[in-house]
Length: 348
Image (cartoon, rainbow, N blue to C red):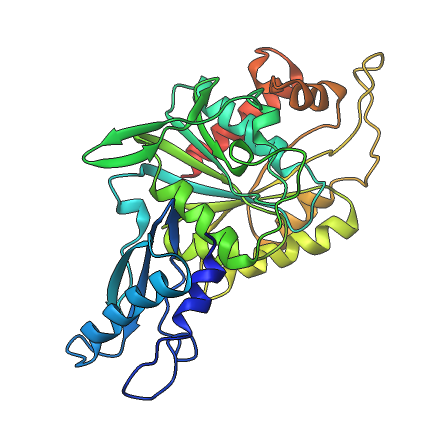
């Protein structure tokens, strides 16, 4: 089954008070869950003593069995308009002191590389770290951590079946890349992608964490809004290169999180690919993408500059080989990521 089948089935159910179907009436919450033949979702009513509540729920159950499959086992939850679920960060299934999103306005600036190495640097500093790869259409964490062949298993806790994150280099990690064929594109609508992310957060055995890092997709999308509404974010880190075209998009990202309707603190900016240093000329700096554009943007917007990462071959090799450069104690690039981690720890 897939969500659209459920939506189509509920179009056959009309709310007696208006004569409109449930979808047209906007009564279906965007929280559809599917596990085998088991389906769960919420219906939103205007008031808690709605006289049609029970009949609508029963009609919805019947519609699923009639228009999808007689074996469907529906679990329909009732919500009253205006009610909001408590932030999932308070849920016993994700207990994190700090929930930090890493964002970039455009792809290709090294956001995932920064996220992976920051997670490793925090873990090496002795912190309990979780990492969610929320880039549904371009998941890269399995490759960066050398776990492409790993598949999460299920565990039982308090009568619930939960997903056990993959642990590598001291980091607990989940990615949609563990559940799909890496050679095939993930072609999902926004609602489906958002629900998949919700499930990786809520239905996983994360345990107690000090830092929960989220590698966001580039740009802005439904996933960003879902995570902002579902989780009480400590703040966001923005990654950019010094290149003017990247800075334009980085500025938009900062303004999005600063918007009064979003209102997520900006913890700082990371300037990636800040300069190129050849191995044979370790004291030379070549500003391939422009000089200190990220630093200038941070100063202009009044946000901290957490660090500048050089463009060096070992960082790229570490990501491709599943061995983040932050693992190499004493390496100049590793020191740069450790510096960012220490500034983040101080900031939060």
